[in-house]
Image 1 (cartoon, rainbow, N blue to C red):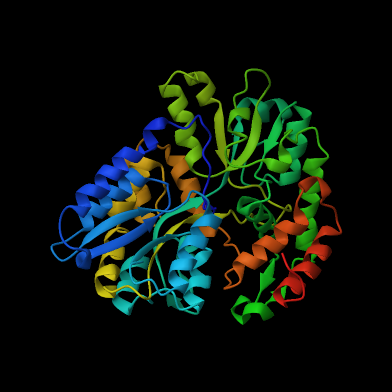
Image 2: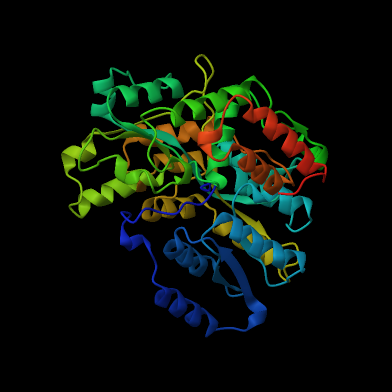
Length: 437
């Protein structure tokens, strides 16, 4: 997803990461108290890391302009809808936007984003890992600045893997993980509700088998639909295997990023294998801090690269995060471009990683002493996953593509070897205007 696609956090996440509405209101009122509306740059942000984003807005304000935070809804779909309505109406007060990476092609194609000039493009992309770098380009031009990056790894209980006799390495496959969990009485945590993170899972498995959901996406509605393939059937087979396994969690069809967190360290039982985003580490570390988890339990937490779809083919971990775009109708495009560069510097990314657990898009930040609370091997795993990761389809019609795939692949309990063909036909009809979502 944000979570890449953006995540709904489990209630166990530390409350200190939530900014009270009163605090946001106070910050907004203080900003509004100085200067005129003519020198305001509005920055529409998603709810992740608002405390640090507010500090960055203050630090990056200048004598010429002040950056004012505007809070978007929590869901990625609602964020897209609100921003699209403003931009379609040529709203001149939409200066900066925190964008889920999949929005960039759509907004750029619609003419809603400023293209970054050569110097600015070089400044915001220098040293950025390949995964997040790919998300800010469209038709060989840069339309956004990577601010932070997200990826998924396989989290697991070391004792569970040992009991199942599964040697954990970057060679482990989805099939092996599911079988191991079932053998040892554990479970497998995924995101399979009918929402964007389910598309993230499907896409990563298809890419991991050497395929694509769609290709030639710059052709717009005439893109090539590829999901009816061996790669698509490999992904369907994994979902089918999990759905029929004792390792499936009871809420499989409505599972999200937060629902399986509690299954890692249940009151009874051996725990789970779970694919999830980078926030997981700080989530469980916070439970040690507040006494909800013992140090011995936390030390039983392991991590390894995202599972392979098929043996012999490297996995393509999901890539998410947030990119900063500049509105095409901003009254102050030069100021907004300058501000976009300021809020995405290495120092800004360091602060987001240190204080909010939102990982850097730039490679150099992973060696910062400010990230010393994270184990070195975990930082390297995240960095490698972002370097080698696979994007969701880059298309101006991504919202249609994602919704069409979800419509035929949900519920996961209904997925079988015919699902890729059915979804290919439906997606083709949707793109051709012959079917409605």
